Length: 572
Image (cartoon, rainbow, N blue to C red; front, side, top):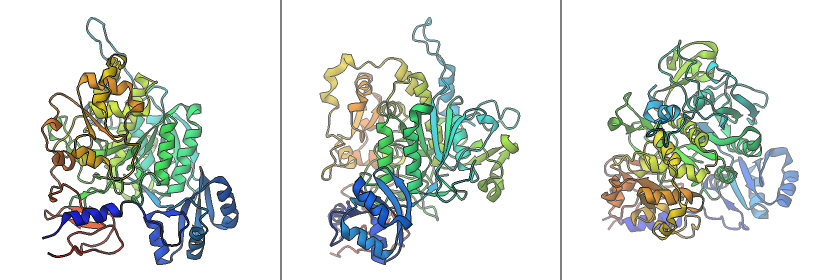
């Protein structure tokens, strides 16, 4: 008989990256440790204080790729890496990993059209005007944004941080333009070209083109971080209230030390809502479901992480399902429940960048039009993320004083929970921007409800010492708030002081009220352990044929613990 407890214990021991022997306080991400063990050169991000960075910059100047906030990206030889670790000047070293893009009924399905229309109210009372994201700045940190009729006059700034292509403009890959259209493409540009594009979620937003992915759709983590930091510095100038990150790389360390997650946290601290794709790793090449495929920075507790919904071409929400490619949680190392939400992302028609790589490589994706008024069909969590970024802009148009925490609460609490997908499949559920906007505009005043504080308490997510992750708290129900309207009013008004890692779900008839904790978490995709734990590893196959995959290894034993090899449990 196999002992699940042994495996769980080993997983907990390996939750945080261990420091190699002889290391003087410098911690390493898993990928850097692997490079060290194999004796290969690497491109790394070194976190250190300013005096140490100055010294290291001088010493490794020839390999210096980019200076960042309290960090730098450098190319190191095997000997350089060993010396860098032995000196102990660096606080933490991460891989400067390659980052890749996560590649007509949408606005009706998400409620965006209702937000545009506004409400008349009863005898004129409580009426609201329509909102379109007017004047809200959204930074699209991606492969660029091409000139397009549907975006005419609303690309207010451009910046290029692709270190390998410093002089390239526009969007030669084609991904960022499609995402920008999902965020804020106008509703009228396609009227004489195709009926399959009805506009982005917020058709009057201002877009800021921050190019970080090259002509092949790939960039470096340090380029993305530089783009995020530039956005923070220029947020006031362009009224940037939202960052869209439809990209990611495999998680190699906890979010607390991940440089990309740290950049997301800086943006949120600057009052910018960061919307991130969950990743497209929800199944294997042969179609088997994958658990734990959330990419960085989707593992950040401060990001709104978005999975992809397949609406199956209908407005009937009852047939909506999680797209099979959409990455599921929980997140590696942190055991966080992700994604936070899902939105339509399958077969989405949006804007086409003229003569872009995607168009040349996949001409069958072209839908209609030509030149600067052409349209393309793509699927992915990238598309779903753009839909949500536009929805966030609608909420900010309705109330510019909203904070990122309040926006996250409003979106989660108004979402339609999808019990068949579980929290690690669809998070709080499918977005409903109309419900979120009405929740905001009906005046959920918390000053009358301060007595609710004790009932909404629980362990503080910011104090992550020991093993007190969200998964455990969901098991014992301290990591989920089942909110009535009065509860919601208090939570919304005090969102900035609330816990980032708690899922907020609303409704007296909420399915969570009667669902067993493990079913709530895993949905119908995993329940093979009597302890209700996912057994973590590089490649794991459950008895039902489901997978948890952290790498490209083949299944050699029933359970694999985090390591470069395979660990077979003792036979009893």
